[in-house]
Each structure stands twice: as C-alpha cells, then as structure tokens.
Amino acid sequence: QVQLVESGGGLVQPGGSLRLSCAASGSIFNINHMAWYRQAPGQQRELVAAVTSGGSTNSADSVRGRFFISRDNAKNTVYLQMNSLKPEDTAVYYCRLVLRTSVVSPLSSYWGQGTQVTVSS
Image (cartoon, rainbow, N blue to C red; front, top):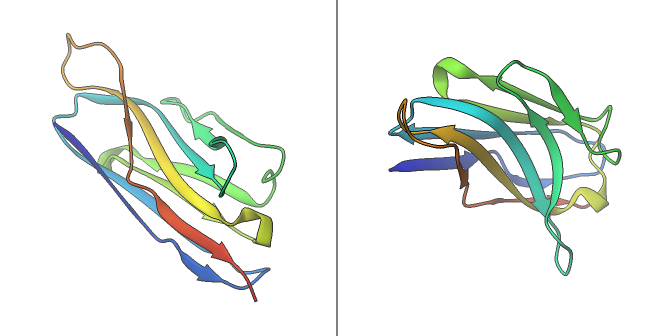
C-alpha cells in the first residue's frame, strides 16, 4: 500500500508564491516519474510539470519560468515551487508518482488527494 500526502496549498495574492509538497510512504521500492497536474473548475486535468528519476524536468508552457519542480529521493517527496502566481493558476493541484512497490512489480501510478490553490486579491 502506498500513500501520497500533499500539502502547501492555500490562498495567495497575484504575484505571490507557494510551495507544494507531496510525500509518499508505504511499500516503495523505487520511484520513477514524479509530476504535478492541476484541474480548474470545468476544465480537464492538465500536466503542470514533471521530473524523471534522472532529474530531467519539463513543464507546461503556461508555467515555464514561474513554476519549478524538484524531488528529494531520500524523502520520497516531490515539490512544486510556484512563483509569480496568476489568477489563472487557480486550480486543484494533484501529484502523480509512477513507482514500483518491489523489485519484481510493474510500474504503477498513484495520485495524491489534491490541494486547492487559489490566486485572488
């Protein structure tokens, strides 16, 4: 069993910053891919940023240069540093981890419970 716990969401004014965290615990052998998605009301869930096991990152055009993803393998945690926030960044943010629970298990995808980020004055 694997659990993901997200934290760091909240209400922030335009131009402000927030840092999201997603910590994984339970039966984890290794974590391959870590990513953040978001879903605004009435919109489809979209990829915000991702980081591979080797540390390579990619991000959506809408957040590039403002949002930065990082991972701490020792803590099984992925972070999303969000700067220069805009009202259009308002959404529920979800982390997604692709991992193995044992040396012989296939890669499986796990989602966090979501954390609300609201950007408003």
